[in-house]
Image 1 (cartoon, rainbow, N blue to C red):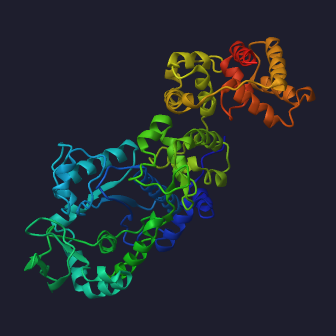
Image 2 (tube, one colour; image 1 turned 135 degrees about the vertical axis):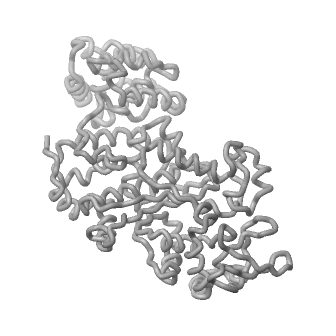
Image 3 (cartoon, rainbow, N blue to C red; image 1 turned 90 degrees about the vertical axis):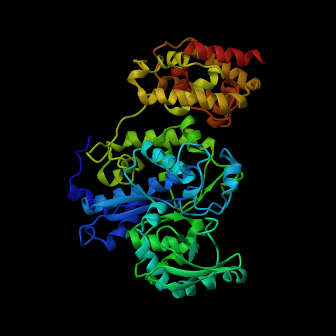
Length: 539
């Protein structure tokens, strides 16, 4: 096993690494080669709109930002950093979400700040408080290191008042940035500042006049009446693009990524940040998720995949791996990708310990282990599972929709010496996932076809070979025997792929499957012979 890298060796390797977190961190390094000159932490930010519950997009942004944060810390030898998870809970509620109880309660409060709408779940003071609590529980569940900041707390406490003065002083300059980007009708009502109505409590989209920037006084019309209003202390919020820029400047944000759909917002907010005396942070523009048909994921269509679904059929680590890879490419997000992500995670993890340092830094698991600090002390994986998830799924598929934990562990005894789930916690977790995946997705779709004449002859030869094979034969020995039958010209297979597809379709009821030698070793020779007998009985 390789020795842990020294700090100097790690820094040197990180500075030439092609892994995307290091590439992102390199751009930040140009701003702050050794951290900020005043010693304050470099600030990473993620944003969240609490008009709905957290979802996999929320998770991916915090995860990916943390990956860049850890990469920057490695590049600098430990420069101080912070991660702020910002909740935009002063935003006015524009639409009632579909998955919320008491929709009539939200309907009656449309337009009001999320933090001033009663909680339809009846647990917190406001709808925003509820969703913020879910967000924090959600992030804590995965062990992220972050600081939670809410817009309502900053606006209401006056912490943003100085920043609001800056917006008011530069109101016209901000209008000069924004108005050319808007449709003519929108220009008539656009204002960088959105006052909260003293009458209805709603966030208003009305043009206004700045009367006194230092005192925070503005004038606008509401229902035909001219109103003079102080916007400080939570009596206003800013338009989205202006708010984003103000937040960068007020908090001192140095890095924030966003989805491709916010590219225009990023451009305009960057210009506004410059007007306010700051600058746009560094950040990655990532691609959006697609469903299995290649269509954009939409909450209203319900064609996405929730975190709860992923964790029912896969693991947190596999989700992390999926989100790590190729953030600038559009990615399909559906149930079918989970098994492969699980097995790829363990393949990467098993390779990690023996890799040279430059290869380690390109291994996704090296980065994922450092998200919560697990790998910071030199821990470099190297552990593996005794069986793959794909193999587990095929085993459970053969056992049927009513397979039990005890049945699965009984068959695992053919493959591993110690079948106590307590001694294999990661495998025990995957057995749970495999049973759920089989119940919901595999069992309903399995259909074993009858073999044709040549395939039946080959299966009979396989049965004869297994009958003469000892129970302690290795998976490799079994695989070799299966190969030899597939290559025998008497059975008419043009290639081994056709032979293995025949095995999968006649024995397992699927067009794809595992290494058959491994499957036979796991399922058992006698049980496999019974599958062959069932297939031959169909002829």
